[in-house]
Length: 255
Image 1 (tube, rainbow, N blue to C red):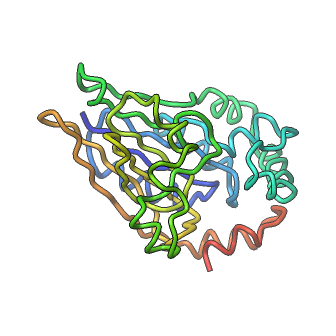
Image 2 (spheres, rainbow, N blue to C red; image 1 turned 90 degrees about the horizontal axis):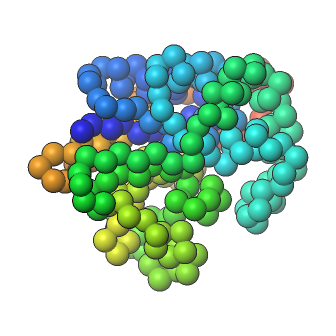
């Protein structure tokens, strides 16, 4: 079984085009999965939805899809609640640019997808946007990498909130996005794989788009990363020329 997963397109048509072109060149696979946050935050949300749908991409919805589904509902978590005054107008701007068919495609996305190559639960691959329980709590890299990034551990292995969202997972691998950084972490016997981001890198500021290949063979999953160069300057120019509210908040990811 061969599954390709990417996440966090955020309305960036140029990154989306580059990733889909690279995935097509990979050859056959059982599924191509987009792990949420697909069209809010970039210059062309409608084009991204069309490209994903026409390619036959499967997907799960993320927190920014929820902002479109429920535009008057303030996010429950503190981080996104504090950003809501800026994000809410962007959500309304995106809704104005999506047709009913495009919004319907997004609304048809499930919260999670599961790929089952083995009769053993721990051989399975589960794909979500942020974590298996909600689209708010971010899963961070392992303790050593957190220390390297921030000189402190912000989410230890014994963090109760982390345990609350992970303890019920039966799969052996959890693939997700949301935290805009590519990493792997082992929590107990669960392998955590952040496949993000396709756009808007928030930690390493590597502007290349990304996707991850999961291949199951001989009882285990092999993971391969791909970084895809694209003309991020085109997205910057398109964003600058758009009338999207608070576009400077999103332009900073490309600078």
